Length: 258
Image (cartoon, rainbow, N blue to C red; front, side):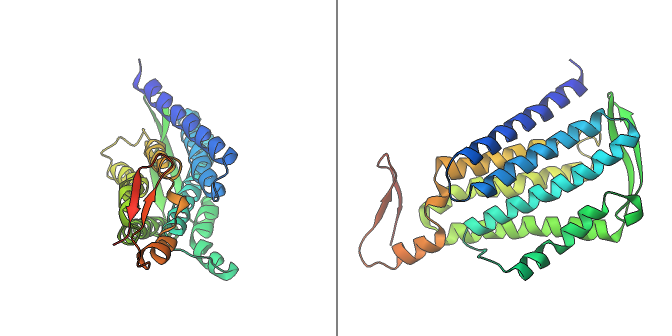
């Protein structure tokens, strides 16, 4: 079987898997299912744009490049917001605060849709393994700023997980590995692509996000990450003088205070 066929099969498998996760989150009544849907659906759209660009002629590939860049940004922000809020680090914010938080990515991603807007310039596409891929692209300061912003979100998200693990007790420490996986895998895959360790023709970022989303869903639906927020845990469990054990529906001990 051709390498291009295997690659497209992997990307489309990721697309279907993420779509199923989004549908599952939408139909199950967790209290923050919108965040779960955004993470999975954003990843599914991302995978679709990657496959569409690989199968397009160069003129149309430029459009799919912009769509892919936008989907990447939406997915990364959704992942960060979900983890930051549910590790107890990010609280409610004002409209002004949300606008400030989104200002850089909105400008960067909207500007990517036209060369005249000064984010991407002179995109050059080529063909290899029967696939269309980006050979060369001139970046501007806006693109660099937007990319640095997204990497900063990854680092802050990892910091949120560390705080969560330190404050949340045994159950949070058990979930921390999966949360670190959720934030760290896409960043690691992106580094592999930027360094061209992975050939540029094969955009494997959606595959990395599939691992990331699966880890996040495992935390939420298998180990009930949202059932006891770390702030509530600290307030209700650690401050009590009585000995407390927290168990799940099967009687397994999940946590205990000092």
